[in-house]
Image (cartoon, rainbow, N blue to C red; front, top):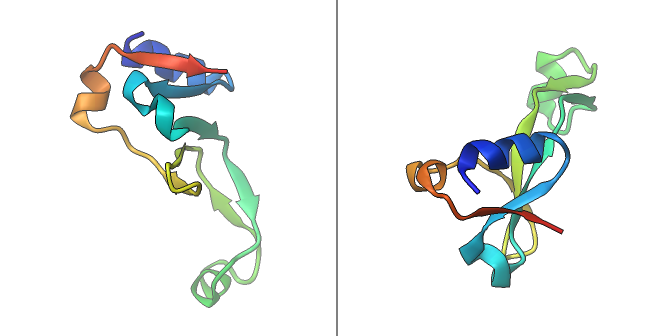
Length: 86
């Protein structure tokens, strides 16, 4: 599927990936906006110790079995090999 279709799918709660990512157990998922307790002294000071509001973002479950924030490359945006991961 095209990237635009993949974005619509991920916003509905699906996991998405490029076909070439399959064997690496990688996928992108949507993290909705939420508030979390501050994890660093910098954020404690910036938000007066109150919860920190985070905007919605896309996250990537990586081949190294951890999670990173994700922004698509130009190649990702132009690709037509996106799929929903079950």
